[in-house]
Image 1 (cartoon, one colour):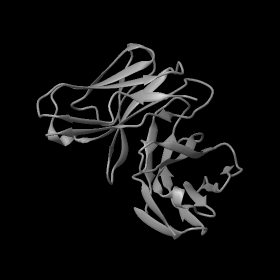
Image 2 (cartoon, each protein chain N blue to C red; image 1 turned 90 degrees about the vertical axis):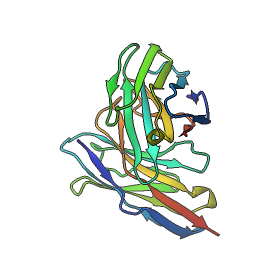
Image 3 (cartoon, rainbow over the protein chains, first blue to last red; image 1 turned 135 degrees about the horizontal axis):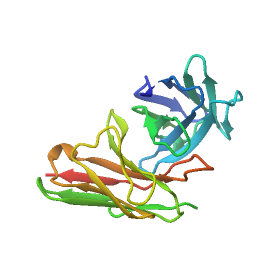
Image 4 (cartoon, rainbow over the protein chains, first blue to last red; image 1 turned 180 degrees about the horizontal axis):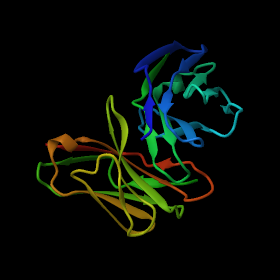
Length: 114
Length: 113
């Protein structure tokens, strides 16, 4: 079974600063998919970014980027130029194969302050 | 845009009641999922379905059942609700092939008194 660990239950960052959220996972699979989801107070789960394990290049989506270290089984999320709207719970998730269910970490609550 | 809807945002039920949580997706997705979200525990998979009338247990199926009579609808059933089933329930759907993204509904916050 795959496990996903987010070691930071809560984090805080000032507006315009950069913050990194950590995620590690455990799997014996060689190919898989990793995701970061955002859940704002509205509760809607929003996909932030995804990474295919077979791709060496780190994924980037505007202000969001990941640092994917396959050997270390690490998948951190960097948010640059933090905005108040980034305040949310962030979940790291693992997918074994397309169409399979997601294995989620316990989440990191991020607060962006003015 | 993919749309996943859930029948209620908030629901209050009494212990022992039979509870139905409905989920509908409008993009002809083959796969549908029910997750339970609790503070400090993240999201945990209850049941999933890869096709009509097909279901598979997830990590925490005890006390729940599901029904998928039509491709677009996936129902979660609490046969006899208990207080420890007070939680947030999230439905999701995805394609079998092609894009791997899962799309989530807005969630149902269920309180069992």
